[in-house]
Image 1 (tube, one colour):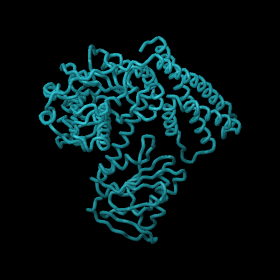
Image 2 (image 1 turned 90 degrees about the vertical axis):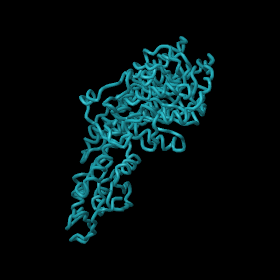
Image 3 (image 1 turned 135 degrees about the horizontal axis):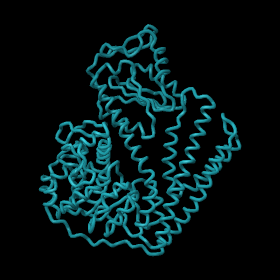
Image 4 (image 1 turned 60 degrees about the vertical axis):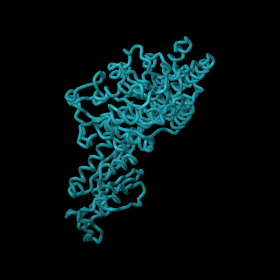
Length: 562
């Protein structure tokens, strides 16, 4: 809490308590309750998460709470006063530093929340430094959520095809459970930031004394410097990611991949690979097709986040992170020979959402909100996985990753890369018996039948919506039939991969069809009609598209093309 402020607790003309900070009145001197009612009427937004800067004496919060008739959540940031609130669905964040506020907002606001920001009167004038920190914390949180949501939307159309067509490979590959605590040697995670270039010389010197993991496209920089990693981690399902790998020839590195990874990447590597799940929801579905234990690996918005988790899973020894700039070091986006490398000036032509963050050496460095979400993922992963481990940020440039100890890479090499690593063990290729492939085909055919039935149900529900005659309400008959269809949809989809996609569609549709202020019955009907229409239409589209990929996988398995 910030204590260097002049606080006065006063009484208004109507007898209510008011507060004055640094000569600024936070409420009306005459009738704070009346002022608060007018303020809430102007600023409150229904069906939103209302984020308020400034609690004051509580008059504005009470008035806003009375407007929250649909249970809208209210979060209050109060940096100057130690206050608490017993009102239902009101949370008070008593903090004044950007980091404290940011952490609290992360716990309270989810990516599907529509946030309405409200500043209580005069709170923006009390202390400009605090105000800037509050705004920065809010801005970073909302921008990070926007990046996460945009990323999810982009890949939501790609993941069904990638997931299904990668299922064929789990018949011959192994679960990462086989890599659990496999090593005592140090692991070095190489990421593709600009600072990687200066670490290449040291990396070459210690190559036979470490286990080397390449984060995604970083492999090209390494191979161009005649360094072959032991493992390459890949999770990105885009064609752009496949383009990083498609020209690689004769690489003996082992691929560790999520099933959302672009399905053509696996065939680039002749050696055996390892698979893992990036969410709990897919584990049940994957487990139907393999006797291997499917492992969930926590990550974030970057492949390097997953590489970090995997490193802590794979070795009991020390871990070094290199090339993880998370900033535009030397005015570049990536290290040399990375196909994504661009100059900062080229980036600035297309976007302006840059942000300054604390740098590796304590200076301010230029970053953006995409890098910021990656940085925060590292920090969160380190809290849960790395606190008791010897893990060092040896990037020597870029942004500071809070919580991870900085260490020059040469010092890490001298201290920990001291002995020749043990010879590579011969990996057993897990070629599954033909009967297990037949079992997969049988399970997939069952899902195909569910897809066919779901398509019929979605079309029927859309027709039911169109057949409703009223412009103000749905008939009881139509509501009964829609409810009956919904129960069938839920039952059919819950044991298929579509269950995951439908959850996402549900959240998106709920977010963008919120009730509006002073809705008329006809407006409410139209909103609910359009909401349900969008829901069934998107689910229908998802089912039809995914069925095509399912058919392709079944044919590939029948032909023995794995």
